[in-house]
Length: 122
Image (cartoon, rainbow, N blue to C red; front, side):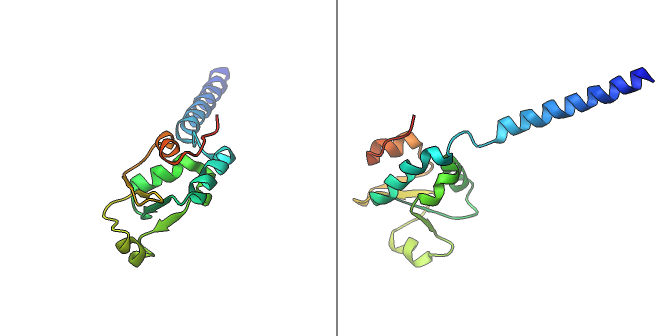
């Protein structure tokens, strides 16, 4: 009887450890309110990200900002096709700077900071 209880406890502990590991592995590692001012600065300066909901690289880019992505000037090309066509968007994600420079593909937050002059939080 005792060995059965110990087995149940052992299985429960293993399940909890695995669940914690999965959570720590897949939780957002950046973003959140800490990046609000950075995302707002990018938008204020005229930076825009063009993407598509089905694009995995776009999802990765959005995840870098976490909940702060809501402040990014984002154009969903499946909904605003004319705007994307006029901007010459041929791949996703695409960042366009105020002077028209195109940054193709996923960009690190450090790169966006360097190009924009917006300060990343520590």
